[in-house]
Image (cartoon, rainbow, N blue to C red):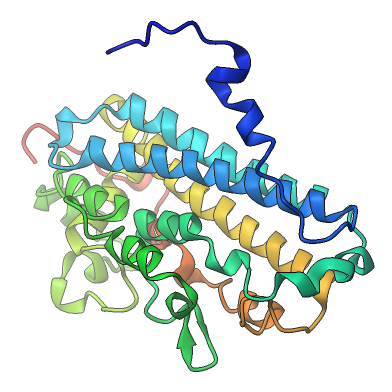
Length: 314
């Protein structure tokens, strides 16, 4: 790793002087300064999330079960979760601005909206959140309001080698040890209340209900059932973190929705959306990248009823 020889100061290393010049309010309204800084800080955290999620995707891409640096992936995903939780708290700072103060400069924001955040759209794409149904307002889609170059970045975010984080994780889960142990699955299904056909029978795999492949779902279920086994403890921690990210992201959406409602009521959004109503439409289960992992709890049974799994000869 090359290291620059130039002697750095705190200011030159962090570009503090340049950073502090990035706030350019459109008015002299006092609270516009808060509004700008809060959004700029969010974009910096988004940049870190993209950096970490991309690295985790690369850790899994093209790797077999035993060739993934799980401890590194877990560490970085823990950080992503913490950043999302921090961003939720940041909304409370914005809420110190009375709605009337916001009205004093909101008129100068026409055409400018968080709706257009390129980095947030990249995060959604990188995680594996699809947008076939979402991000619409009126008869248009959110990308209609984006610059041509930004639109290309978003469209290509999930087209890179390896695809999204969800894509590479599915491939990895499909190699879960013991997944082909038919004896285990037969014993587990003996309980008449446990119908595994949606997972085990590809002909019953409902498109639109499941995002993940049947085999990757089977791998995820094995990990959850045998989370106490040494070889599955880190994989289970990974799956838990993926659900934590979805939960944190949904909390971010919920808090954002309520803050917008508090600030502008039923007014139209500055980016051309319906504002509060548009945001409410983004708070649903298909905005979870790893929503299928939540559904796995449907197929869990008490430990005493779980057959032993031979991962060596599965």
